[in-house]
Length: 88
Image (tube, rainbow, N blue to C red):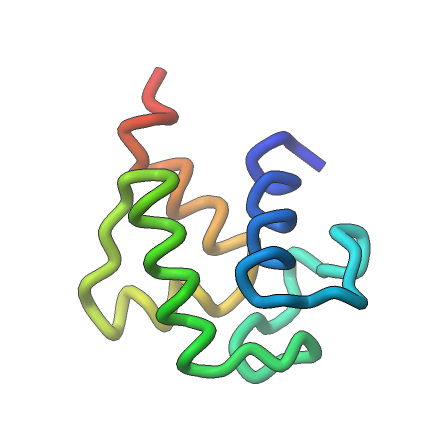
């Protein structure tokens, strides 16, 4: 697992209060919203705020948000492509 993925897993556990979940429990390809973690629309708002604050990536379009938050893998890839903090 790369550093960005591990970092995002930790942040998701923290902001969503998933106290009984470890980073290893989060499958990168599993459905995020409505999946095993029980993430709902309120949780998505918290994730959007985290992504904007920590990675300076704005997600202000419902269609983009649905794609980005469909899986952890999609979220990580979107942040990696769009974050000025991660630009090489």
